Length: 114
Length: 111
Image (cartoon, rainbow over all chains, first blue to last red; front, top):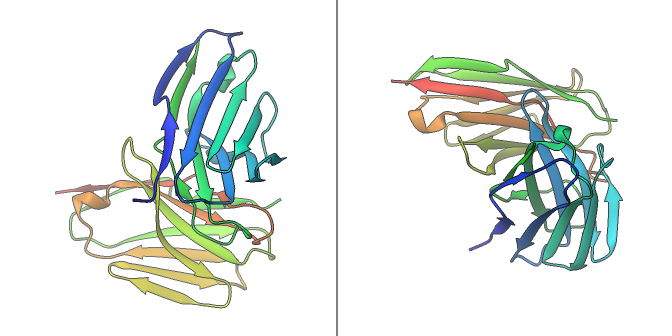
């Protein structure tokens, strides 16, 4: 069963704390993504990873960094979280080579920064 | 960069009715337009797509129309059911960058 798995599902942090969101996929997909979803704004791309250690900024990378050391695993890191980073974060993956293909999404992580 | 807009932002229909969700984009280089459905509290799931060399695509109760000249898409859902209640997202990409999403259309189907 093809799957994108995100951990944790819910997370509450205080402003200034570090946050690690993890994502895994079992489809050997080359490309992985981190999006955030906010009401009225749809999904906005934070970072894209084309393969191990091959990462690029999306539309809203400020305040975030990523790590991809294995093809099946992609992490999103918030160093010193801010309240405006409260959001739902979705990881996604695609087979690779082009963006003109289906994205497979994880179930999301709802992050609250107090 | 590409900007994607959807209208309406929300709608409520009675079970059995048909609905139309509109999507427009700005970048004439966009060639691939997938749509995703997000049921409450769930992940986004792909439902239908169309490429710029097509005008129409149909799968079961979904029909997707594409007008390259006006940069406009329409998703038509017929015979709606309560299980169709979800947020529907339109997306666009030029195949070289990444998919950009619209703000979503929240559909509620009531008995």
